Image (cartoon, rainbow, N blue to C red; front, side):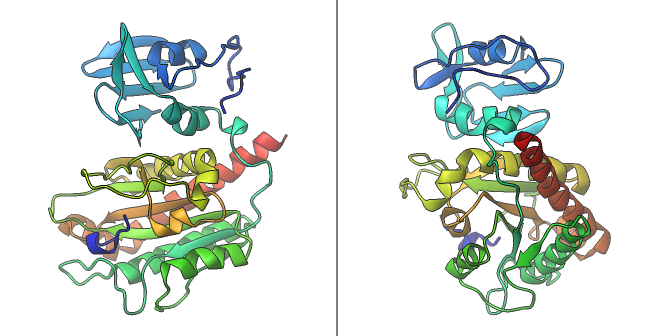
Length: 322
């Protein structure tokens, strides 16, 4: 996505998947201590440099102190607020726990109970809006349409109904994309893009979900902005599950650097009528990644990552329904 086109319950009884750990009452404060999280998930705690590391048999959480960066099972997850010193230990905001960490680890408690019956894929840009353009004249609008078509084929091979906001090189407004998803009854919405940056060294893949109400987005540089509740915020926890599933599979299949699961108020996320994510498949401003975008093998790998992430989310929903 070109820079100029960007628009800027925790239950009281915890049943941890794969664990017989006893339930712990959620703290009443607006922060959650890392020691509480470790006890909740029956994890051992250690310190490695600037990171607090928590592990059990099934999961691994690393939180960087005085930073918004965390890692869940090796995949980067950006918090809305930095991890800060609290008393004799470290803590994260309750919001980041309830709408980020816990949904990822205990998806069954947060995903919708309705089986996803319709996936809408949104190839970014199109028509008069080319999106990012690399030095070799690789157009984002064309690359992401190719990737979206591959994702569609993979999902349909698994009997998942798919609609596309566009199937040709046509221009759509941002509202038309989310309106289309609502019109066809989308249960999942995934917007597909390629990135661009002023520095040609910028590289890697990343997935965005909607920023929580009252919070700054991940790519926040001090500007004031709208922090009100939007339509997409009703799916905050499910968005985290979907976004993490896509990002973890995208990193695995693309073999590119992990820029993380991030939060942003992109219009298609703000107005999404269902759980939604926006995927950045690499930087067209980076010569190496622009060359990869031309390669059908890379487009296939990225498509596999996105489709595997969507299928992974659907599997989690199906398990939660049992």
